[in-house]
Amino acid sequence: MKLTLIGNGMMAKSLAKGLASTYEIEIIGRDEKNLAQLQKEVPEVSIKVISDKEDITDKIVIFCVKPYALHSVSARLTGKAKVFLSILAGTKLESLKKNIASAHYVRCMPNVAATYQKSMTTITGDKEAKNLAVELFASIGKTLWVNTENQLDIATAVAGSGPAFLALIAEGLADGAVNAGLERHHASELVQGLFEGTAALLSNEKPADIKDSVMSPGGTTAAGYTALENGAVRASLIDAINKAYEKAVQLSKD
Image (cartoon, rainbow, N blue to C red; front, side):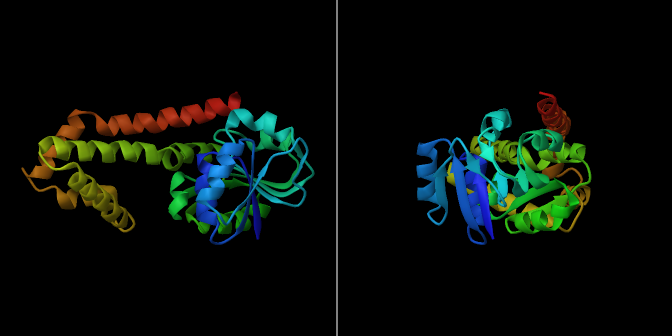
């Protein structure tokens, strides 16, 4: 199966790296320098600078541009795609249908872990394209089909933006270890192993159960956990998700 990725940014690169082992990938973009670099990093894909009349007839397209570029890029697309899959945050199916011709439309939100085939991708759209979309993104990680675009916007705040939030936590944990006296490379290795192990735990146990199993009365975990609660870490994470979701809703209105 051949996939056409339109866009040459970070997410296009992540998707290309993850999908190239399973699918034939064509990447169409506007930035020749970025395309050339992408070709070096993923030599098995084909690249092309977008033309003023780019024919997408019968293609399976993954639209990877920034939301603000929807109109300028879609104006160059001609023909009718077979399936049009958009990763544009906050961009509604209705808006896609007004700007691009396709037999079926799907919104999806993968994340940068697609590079390592570990993306958590949320999907919604035309049910006729559900099986194809789920199969496609299952090749680069886990998938979740939701029934409404509002649910996808919420999921975008969690799984789409989440790697940045978790990276901040990871960096903070490592900084804490360095501050206590551990060498940076040891701190980084410990945090990497911690996240890998915790991911396995979360696949089998509830977060509250994991916390209770680690926290002994009056112990080190309890002391550290109290510091996190005093710092309103839980409330800040809840607020971060709400703010990211609100931004996705705002993008849809813009």
